[in-house]
Image 1 (tube, rainbow over the protein chains, first blue to last red):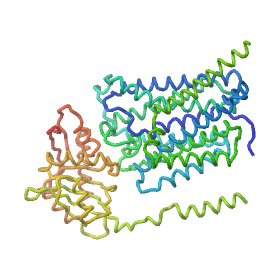
Image 2: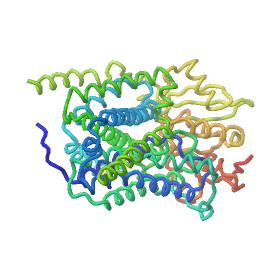
Image 3: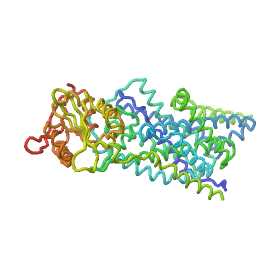
Image 4: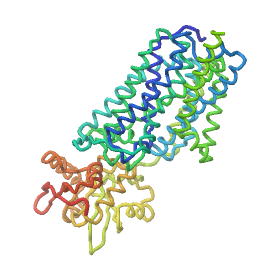
Length: 352
Length: 196
């Protein structure tokens, strides 16, 4: 039976950090060829600055009222909350679908093209439903172990690539065009989906400080920066010959004659996607005020699976569900527009 | 009761998931360990050396313009289940360096099933003949390539480093490993112009 006891905010931040790392792990071919390392580094900085801004409305609501956004909206507009909840449910279905599709694409293109991708998705969703039933606290606890594993995986991948590094002073030039800048910044702003998860789950956390968000985003930006650094200097042009440069990094990582460290990458990417999907399902349950409900989470997981089948049947659906621009606009609406509207609306109501 | 049902479900699932129905006999799988490219009577040939338990090398040779078409030809003509994921060594006869190496490395770099860290070297024609007879030569060649990397850090011995040298437009000479087998096996470094 689930209890209403609040859990430490550090745990949720850890889960969000791991969730946002899935963006770089499942990166397909999002690094532009002609941009320099410093130019892409600037995109990471701007991207994460945008992610930080997306967190502000929900952090303000949490600091002032100690409530999650849905609970806050319910308090302010009880009659309209059903529409807000429905919109957030659609958003979390989109989020889960976005990462599930990206993961299954990576799995079929890089790991096993003959595997039944529907079975992989179904099993992943089934485990996520179970995790969602246990609640955000259980998932956040689980993220401690996932973090330990991911830390080892990242250290192994990066240290195994040190011998491949070829750094020249000329590689530190600053070049790139506006189109590339918009594209990469949009890609590096994708982790903003964690702000929406935070806005919904923040009601269940205690000991929250705004600096925790800053620390989480700094660590996230460092991870992204490290992946970019090794992609540029250890893989070079080879990174653009194939998709999924993070996976390629795990293949090129080696210690003397010991190689084949891609299983570390595969495990950490799977675990991070599992966190995103299970947290999305928890958020859906919270939006519908049915925390820990197996049938409810199951119904939405089924919906995600049906959409998954549709996207593999119709290319247009898949393009729409994996478009980072659409995802970012949707995130902007859910993380900034609606919460800011409620903050302003709430103040006016108090003034009246 | 619910836990027992879940346990039974997981037991049944564990029988389905390992994919035993799709299993392939390793002897029949045709796993290539070495590929050699050589020239004979003005034509280019590619030989695939397979993982096997026999004492002499098991290989097949196809005539093709590039490694890509050699793979296609080998799959369509003789080895339908040709596997290249375990390829350790790609040997090209020196005379073909300017003709096929760039194309072949490009093909390797585009396909994720190849290891970016397999060894690539140039050699003389005699080594190709020796590889056809001596199964243990693979290890000796790999040791010589490693020796070359220790002699000179700038030498490119993997598809990763060779592809990057081909992609750079700085007119720098590309240092490749070369195995000389005239009297005894010797490792040397040969420099080519990647832009040619």
